[in-house]
Length: 163
Ligand SMILES: [Zn+2]
Image (cartoon, rainbow, N blue to C red; front, top):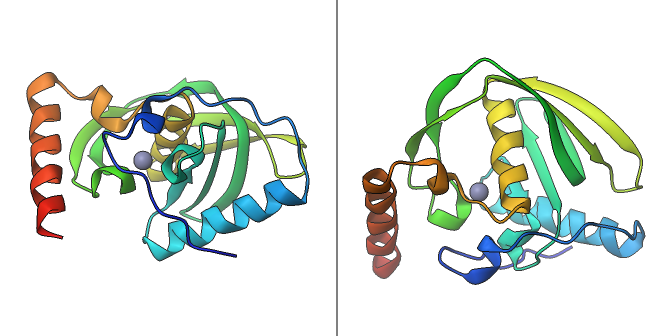
């Protein structure tokens, strides 16, 4: 297992729509293990393949008791609305308020290629939506009004320079 380098905004891969995962082998399992290790090291609750430089429809998450690998994720049901703080490891965890559905159902394949459905609400639902967006080349700041998006990017760039 290895900790991978996390890609950061505005690296192009973050805006790429991921390719479908078609091979479910040991290599994929190793990749997922690396993604979990990278996510835990960065103290995140979810990590998509784009965030380690791979344009793939794949993410891992461990949030509010829901720990899973999701290959080829689709959100098949959304319900209600929640407004809350959201951040992203690729945008330096700079937080912003994002309105999301409050209950969602995710359909995806696990690391063995078996399809499953998982319902979640609150923070875990937010995580499903955030990570599925990554797989489609979308960042949480894409949901923000222009001015607020610029503020998040500005703060991230400033903090990055200090590192
Ligand atoms: Zn993210």
